[in-house]
Length: 298
Image (cartoon, rainbow, N blue to C red; front, side, top):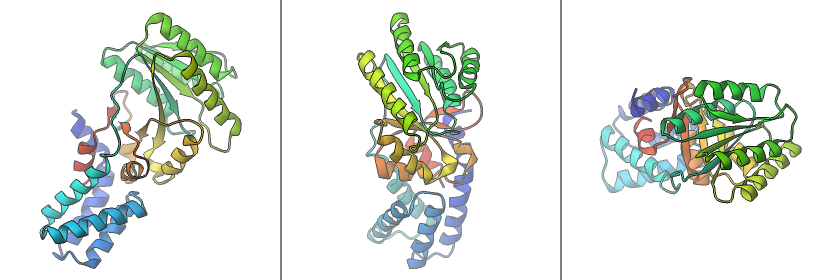
């Protein structure tokens, strides 16, 4: 299945939520205040966010008047142009190697599964990959990652449960340098900003990475669950206080009508969405392309 079709399938619920309502509004044929108010409500309902939705609709209103837009196709085209412009402030990530990618986020967003899928992605692109089981806090976390390592035929560095996570990362870096690994994927424990000890642990891991692997390209990716909608913004805020976030991986895009949160993230933080989860399969993690995303919204 091609990427465009995968994105289209993943966004089905979001697209249905938006497109059906826009079709109904455009059927009246009037781009009046009621139309723009209703459109704002539609965008908000898909978790594009209140402020972002209002700014998008204000831009559409101005352009519709200036360009004398009358029919639904022209309105949709202009709305897509506006949405695509929201993504232009986020520089896309082109990976340099060797790379160390640290995966962070709260519990339950799918970090460990995402690492497994990332291993599959990079190995498919002819890169040598090593996993680091840095989640020593959650029971059986390293076992879950080990299953993915076996499934993807990927080397894994792990210690016993309860070990110092930074020490595991240190060993992973040492191994990666010795083996000439292209990509080091670091799992970390799920944590909330209220878990001060775990947040400090994350800072310690970040310090180890920067000190011990100076020659590597470093990426801190936060994994967000698309079904949480606007709460994803709160998670970015919380983690940004402790480590610099370089990009976003959005999971469960196929299970929500709230896919518009991607627009809100870009508007608020100008952080690139690097990958999106578009299904349950091991290959269902795709590089994010904002043109495909917007074209599949409605």
